View 1 (cartoon, rainbow, N blue to C red):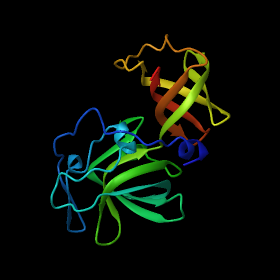
View 2 (view 1 turned 60 degrees about the vertical axis):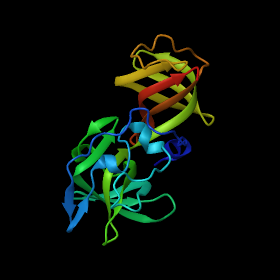
View 3 (view 1 turned 135 degrees about the horizontal axis):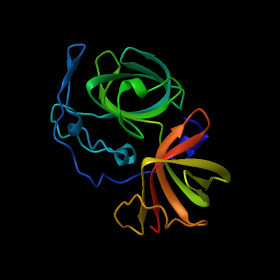
View 4 (view 1 turned 45 degrees about the vertical axis):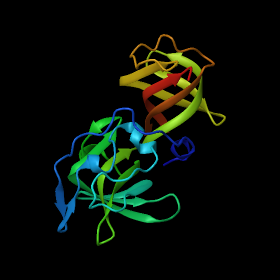
Length: 211
């Protein structure tokens, strides 16, 4: 991802929403892909959570990779990692895809950044149970507030953050609410959202203040 996405990555905590039931398994190249919940939660927070032990005893190791998509061939994502490594990520009918919201492979584009979790296959590809596209988790300061966007300071640069239908705020640890009227200029804010590669802005999913 760009400097905005990479610089904003922060270690997270285990998801508050718990693990989902097993999804339908899928077969790729003769190997069985376990249900997504066997490897962990699927919500956006799970992208930043510490690795956890698989719930499926048949899976001895979970693989977690990051990078930027260089090509999409069928359901295979060809990804360049930030350290120069390359990955082939297989999307199956059991893969959970997130890009601001739960989505499909049609919404994923060359140039997008991602974090992906899955199981390494015998051919070296990674069968993904979850892919988070362009996800960012940023510690910022609110510099401006408009009807459809926030202006944030992040690492001494301005960042435009667009509100979307899913945008919600949490005030001092309270439950999420779509009411953004209590946000104030000068407040430190943790922002979870999705980077827009085209203009280096982000779409805001969650703003947390007073934490």
